[in-house]
Length: 409
Image (cartoon, rainbow, N blue to C red; front, side):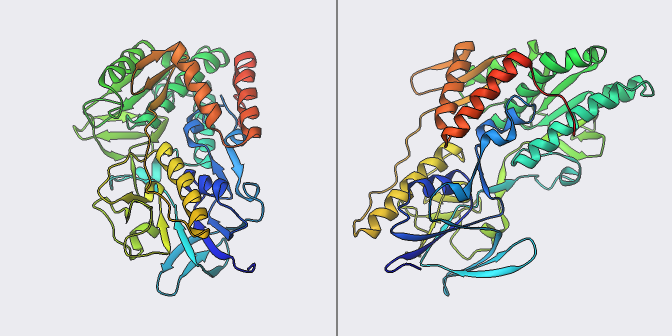
């Protein structure tokens, strides 16, 4: 440890932690990052990677290259001991302990399965690059199997039925991206299968995209109907089998691929740490992101909440919190007291297929092709690195000219 430097230990490599890492002054701290993955993932474009519109490498940035002088350990934190000011970590083949002067918890949240039988075993999720790769492989596998001469009509229709559970932004965007892949690329590669292809979006609530303005939600449902995407609201799931989903009303729905996107729950570390939690199990902090009752522990992103303040669990919030905390820690190291965190809402965006998108902004609610161009420009500017911006632009151009790669390997 350098002379006069305090050790800043950051848990996680998501939006909040990575934004903090970009902002922190590494001359004032010995910065250590611990995360099970060695990269930052730009999750807003993750649905695009599932179908090959964008390649996986284009939306990730190595943690080790984010800030010169940063130490990184690929491991999961299993326990926080605030009294000893240590954390226990577990790597792929060994365990170790790290001490800290200041600790930042940004471990995000896990997938909420609501305890429904069969979800963990049979569903695919969309949280990490590995999830997107598995979905991409399964889509092509279903099409290849359905094209074989030994497959009967019933089995073919099952294989070509793609189900999405959850009508939030991630579920809607994935359904839209899958529609584009099937209509623009797979319909040409497998022309005899197109009439049997179906996409169904299951939502337990009364409408999809409930965080968006009601007019945009209705617009999306109308567009999906035109795109042959069946939206079934008020349709809760009872259980999952390997090739069918059983609904609460007893109906059995066969599927070839099912993607589960129904919200988040705290991770095990968040559940087991001794800090104060809210009713959703998130760590409670003050308005400077300090954990209640601790002057040396901070928390942000999906694993934390600021007192009674209700903020959406989005990348936009996490990124702003990470940027704020980096500045705040720099100021504290210089003997200055930072101002409280203030969230600024810039609106919400979502891709809905067919080169159309939604924008729910403070002064306008729009949808269509012009909004799609706006959606792309916003996400392009939000990408962290110049390399990623160039790769994403190249991917968009390549897809426009040559189509998506439908190879499976």
